[in-house]
Length: 409
Image 1 (tube, rainbow, N blue to C red):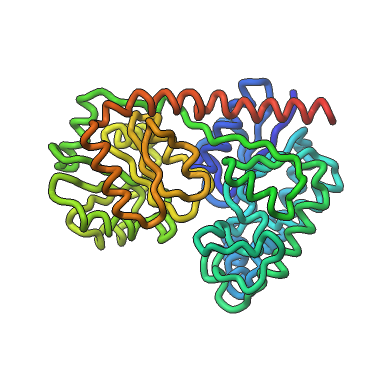
Image 2: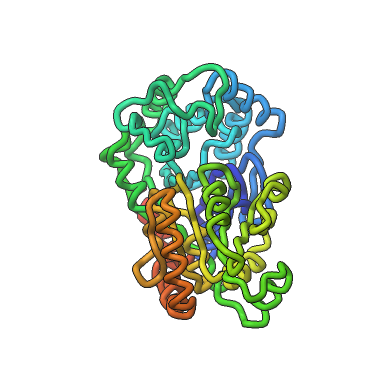
């Protein structure tokens, strides 16, 4: 029985954690033994979980990042302990996800992987792997990563540094670690936009296969009328045109300020509902907005998507947000900014793409959807989600990669 080991910051928590969980399930269905090694948070999993490090090690890694801007180079003991576990389980394939997150030392890990000749699949959910600091360069409109990072404009952004700018050194260290054993690595960007970015980075010429994120279309689906009515009653928003926003963390790059600006342009016929806010953010919202804290109850989230008249994603930095495809699967049209791979989820008959910050364009799109009625878009939204973003199809692509790697091995 072949063995798969996935490594990610979280296990079955958040978007990347759920993706790793679903891939593990698909591997198990195909006769693999599945492990997930994680550094931060975890929920119950069908895979066998391996905890990397502890809270003290995470705090030390955060301190190293804040003081010296050397993210990904702390957690030495935690990583060495992980290598012992890797030797014990002897995986046939190692599948990497987010290596950033204050829990892992990438130099130690990649030196081991190269020495032991283990095939690697690396799903890239953001841009951290090929920049000298940031996880998303588009927010700062910076393209230094194409040749060499220096004088980073985002040192105060995640992973936040407070004193030094080591972006040039970080860029050099990542390039050396991540490309020295590139024949062993299959890079999997989650959007065409990210794949194109890789071709312009030090990963140029690497083995790349784009695989879109997948979702459970049996959970994210249109709900019955009575279920929608109960949500409208819960939030006291009956007879309102509901505009929904969802994010794991509502930072400035996710467009919270854009939602607030939008709320000031709409009359009482509309209501804006945001899911994923902190208690502090909810208290600061204008009266025209309703805030809901983050939930791991996927069924409840799906019902909210299904109830909304339109899903608005004003993201300023994204590679391929799963929120867009979750909304489509629930039959809800999408309005998204022209950001990264966010546009790849939307077609002419399932929503609208507008320029970043173009509130006039957003209002026009909302009015068109309101005039046409949600029903005009719902069937096309659902069909597109089933055809392109069904997890059963997308994650089978990973199993096919694993099998090919085993054959070549």
